[in-house]
Structures are given as C-alpha cells and as structure tokens.
Length: 147
Image 1 (cartoon, rainbow, N blue to C red):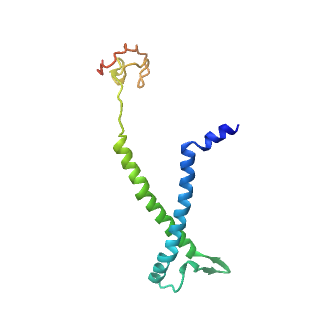
Image 2 (tube, rainbow, N blue to C red):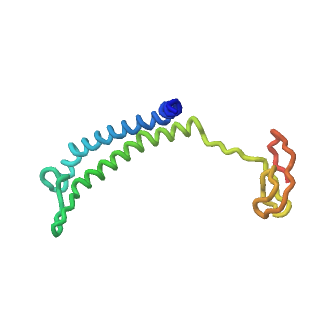
Image 3 (tube, rainbow, N blue to C red):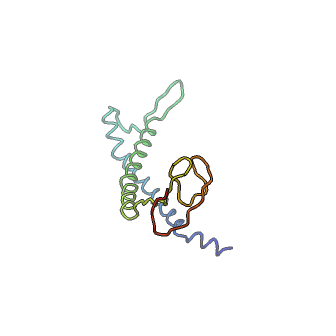
C-alpha cells in the first residue's frame, strides 16, 4: 500500500505540480508587494488620493465598500497574468512548435461510388451517404487515391 503511494508522490508530474504551486505562491507575494510598494502610490498620486488608496472605502448608507483593496487585487492579477503569459506560456508554445510541429497524417482516400465524396480507402461505409463499401486491400506505402 505504501509502495503505491510512494510511486505516486515521486512521479514527475506530481513533484512538478508541487514545485509550481510553491513558486506561484512566492511569485504572488512578490507581485503583491510590488503593487503595494510602487503601483498603489502611483495610482493614488494620479487620482489625487492622499496616502494609501488601497485603504479607501465607499460608505453608502452604513455599508462600507473597500474598493481600494479590490483595485490592488485587480492590478496584481493583471500583472501575474501578463508575466505568466509572456514569460511562461508564450515561450513554451514557441518551443513546442519548434521541436514538435503539428503533422497531419492523411489516410489514403477513394471516392464513394454512390455519392462520389472522398472516403478513407479502408472504410466499410460512406460517411456521407452511408452506403456499404468494400474495403480496398491494404497497399502499404502506395499513398495513392483510388476511385
């Protein structure tokens, strides 16, 4: 029982996921610190708010809306999303396209005798008109289309 659990935990993708979560949490703390230390004062200065605007609230009929902390959270989210996209997703997609290009493998085709639409050579029934077809003998490496 413990051997199965140990093999599950030591599997590469579980360890990678755990490392990714820890790094993500650390990066989130870094971005939140950057937003609070630099962007909050800049936004407060630009909007004319004195002091820390993240502590700003809107009081409507006794109900308090802490909109300043929400603005900080939105800025943090946008920064994290941009960094993850431009520094992780985009480079990984480029590497994937470069080293593992998408290749379509086309099956040999022939025309259906009833509707004349192209169907795979080994098909037993037409996908367009559903008429019965006799599969052609396999001709390995021929790559030809038969009518």
